[in-house]
Each structure stands twice: as structure tokens, then as C-alpha cells.
Length: 103
Image (cartoon, rainbow, N blue to C red; front, side, top):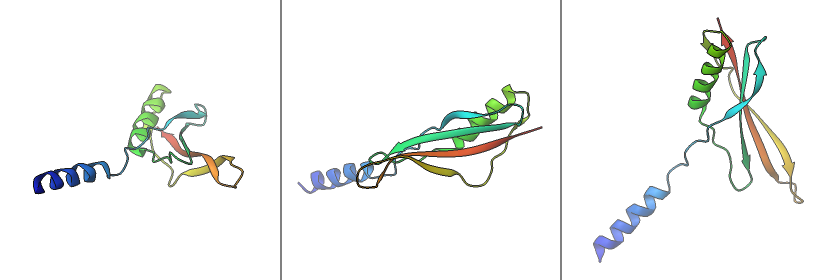
């Protein structure tokens, strides 16, 4: 009986970890200016936790496709609420990060 309780507690503890990051997608940019924009969208009940490492990799790929050497990143990111409910809560949030191309 004790073994079952320990196994159940360990199984529940495994579910309590931090959710995996969402891969931000290409949201625009300017080839001429050498800036790549990556963004993720989240909702009130599914908040966004972007995986910025994957975003930096994708931005670097995009910069190399445009003829640059790679991508750097600006410090921080931008969060904007796109929709509110009747109670004034933000229901849709867009998290954006900008990557300047180098070289």
C-alpha cells in the first residue's frame, strides 16, 4: 500500500514541472534593414512561455538565407494584449522579440 502511495506521488510530481516552451514563429521583419521578428501568441488560459533558444536558431537561419552571417538579439521582448474580455482581462497576448542580422 505504501509503495502505491509513493508511486502515485512521484507520478503527480512529474506532471507538476514547468510546461515546455512554445516555439515562436516568424512574424515579419525586413531583409533590407536586417531585422527578423519572432512572436508567440498566448491566451488567458494558455499563457505563452516562448523558447527563445529555438527562436534565435530560426532567426539565424532566416538571416543566413537573406545573405547575412547570422543573428544577434536585442535585450528583452515586447508583450502586447490583442483582446480583452468583458471583465477587462487580457484574453490574447502576443510576445515578440527582434533579432538584428549581423555581417
